[in-house]
Amino acid sequence: MKNSFFVLLLSLVLVVTACGNEEKETTNEPKGDEAIEETEHEEETAQEEKDEEVTEEKEDLAEVDVQPSYIVNEKTWKVEPIKDANDKVVLLTIDDAPDKYALEMAKTLREKNVPAIFFVNGHFLQSEEGKKTLKEIADLGFPIGNHTYHHENLTEISEDKQREEIISLNDLVEEIIGSRPQFFRAPFGANTDTSLRIAKEEKMIPMNWTFGYDWEVDYQSKDALEKIMVENPYLSNGAILLTHDRSWTNEALEGIINGIQEKGYEFLDPNKIQKEKEAA
Image (cartoon, rainbow, N blue to C red):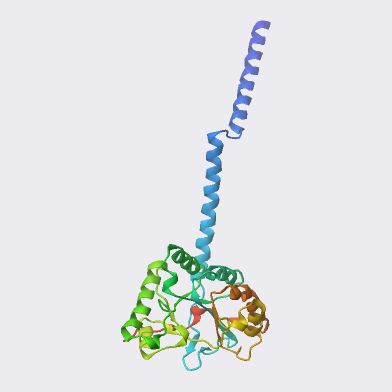
């Protein structure tokens, strides 16, 4: 009887031990290939979550109120409110993109939640790097404007050449980002009857500027450019600010933004500008 009891007790001990070992084995961290697979899975999951955040951010940008509440006055080259929209606004524009600093400028603007239009030239989009940069700027939520393909003075070339300069860039931009520019700026602000007609045919808003200085030698430094852009008699309601893709403008950008905002101005979202209707 005793022997039977001890046999039964030993059997119970063995069963409990086996169960404990099995539980221990199932709770051990994966080793070797299993650990690598788990790490890769975690990295993939993290990347998927990051991609979802980027997608949600783009969707948020797309959901911004785009009801037209401003127009561009083609006589004064200022933006004007429709009805009771805030009149103390300025519009920031950046020309000659994407050369070297446009993407960094776009990231600064995005961090500060400041909108702007990037006017691009086709000769900066001939490389894969240039195309990639333009796509990144557009993906950050910034409207892309047409500044012609080769940045030629439109008053000095034929009507056919003007058309080619404008339409070929629109085609290229659409190929890269999936949409055509909605804004047009002639190089040197030198519009012609032809360029304005083509812009309207393409449903683009012609746009010059109120003031800008970063191409002048005296203002090709951070401090000088900040001061002239902020402490300027032309800084007024509806002003269109002209800047360029330049190193000193990139360095001065945050100071310009802060200074203008401290004066009580809001940077206008270009999506709130009334778009051109299709030409008849």
